[in-house]
Amino acid sequence: MRLARSRRNAELSLLLLAMALVAAYGAMVEAKVLDTVTPTFWVPAAALTAVFLGMHLVIRFLAPFADPALLPAVALLNGLGVGFLHRLDLANAAPAERAELATFAGTGGRQLAWTLISVILAAGLLALMRDHRSISRYAYTLGLAGIVLVMLPAVLPRSMSEINGAKLWVRIGGFTIQPGEFAKLALLVFFAYYLVRKREVLSLASHRFLGIDFPRGRDLGPVLVVWVISLLVLVFEKDLGTSLLYFGMFVATVYIATERVSWLLIGLVLFFGGAYLAYVLGSTVGGPFLNFYHRAEIWLDPFADPYDRGYQLVQGLLALGTGGLFGAGPGGGQPLLLPEVQNDFIFAGIGEEIGLFGLSALLMIYLLIVERGLRAALAVRDSFGKLLAGGLAFTLALQVFVIVGGISKLIPLTGQTTPFLSAGGSSLMANWLIIAVLLRVSDAGRRPVSGVGGKVSRPAGGPPEQLHGAPTEVIRP
Image 1 (cartoon, helix red, strand yellow):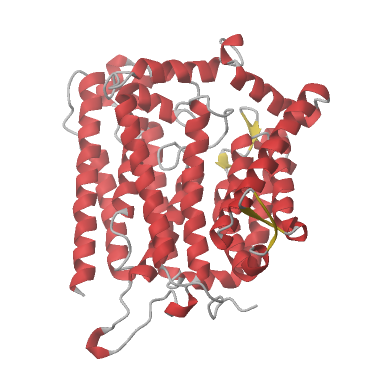
Image 2 (cartoon, rainbow, N blue to C red; image 1 turned 90 degrees about the horizontal axis):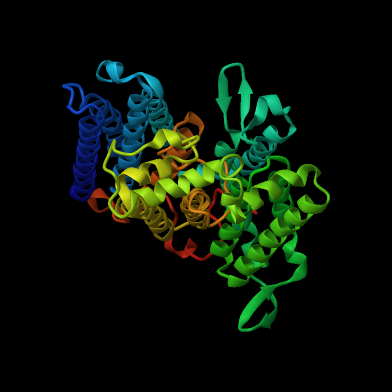
């Protein structure tokens, strides 16, 4: 048990270091914006520390062998997001009122509250899900729920679902939720369950071309179904990022299950072929394809209309260019010139102030989270856990790529949020639930085989022979 205590102590030390960095960031922001550091600069960091220490205690008791780097890395991103949103609140306030701005007011205060709710949900999921394989029992129910959540904004009136041209939300009164954020987790559970049962069939090859084994034509059905659904999302919800995210999740999970590069090639050809077809139809037919055509035109040349349609992307590129290598310093930029800087363009707003080096550090933290998720997938012994953890880790990576790619003009702009940084409860809660599942899977993979008192106990992932074999007892054909 000394190994479990040392890992949790390492997690605690990293967590306190992360919160110290968040407090230092808050102090530098106030020094730049207010020309002084108020006596309460430490309060948001202290509140976050209390929340994350609570999560640390939950992990210590419910998942003692979980990866010790996941919680501190996520806490650092979450804390910096809260700090930057509080910085926006200071910029929005009148100069004479900035020093008196309440710590828990504005967007930063709301994000702090959403952080508390998200961490409570993650802790609750850890308490309810003592074995990650148990959720495979509800795979078909979760798959159906995921499809409903994905399609719900598309069938609602524009007044209840559309923001900035993308139909990704559900608005009821003053309450707004993005159901697609929760659909990610539900669909991945279904994908993992389905592919555990069907991976032997999907691994069969019909012919070999250029050294790559391609699957049989009759086995392309599931990929084509998900491809059609992703194109429907692209056309009717008017968002390339969400469409790419769902299709990419499935193709990546198929690749993890079969280890066939051909599935990645087929997925790329299908998606980019479908996107190009939507672009051509938008330029000729219009109708539901017109929105994607306009977004693609802005992406191709945002400076053609820099004060109207291309304004957001142009301002984002100027912010990144202004930041240079080292940035203007925390609190030294002009993030209010960026439309939706608290949501879609928070990465560009932060980039203006911390520069290329700072953004590279943030991307390295995301890379660390993804790497730890993939390591959990490698360590766990059952096939369902491997596919689930691998799919979740890839989903986080793809979401970061989609938003950063859109801001940097690598791909057309999307309505995705930057995980753990952007304002909003839906994204934060959904991503914390993903972290809870990764913690549970990593706990199963790291748990020692030999028990106390000479007794032999198997990890929750199952016996060694199931590493490349049949599904566990929970997943019966």
